[in-house]
Image 1 (cartoon, rainbow, N blue to C red):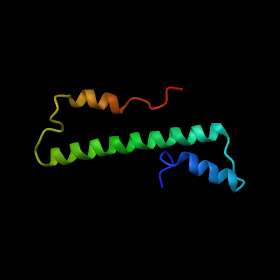
Image 2: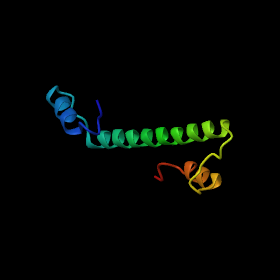
Image 3: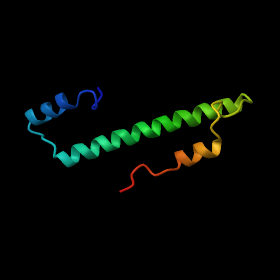
Image 4: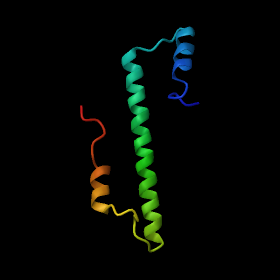
Length: 80
């Protein structure tokens, strides 16, 4: 069950069962979910590049250089 897709329902159920969450805890959870999605996207990008390299193909075929991609991947997720 996706928290993002069922946020309201899940929070209401927790509140109803006597387990309310503080707003800052909910925000932290949502940030961590977002970060996890970013990591999964990056992992897929790296996996695809690795597979392409293993097949003797360029890592990417969309005109963006590997150096540009690595600099984007290396950026910190949370600037706080």
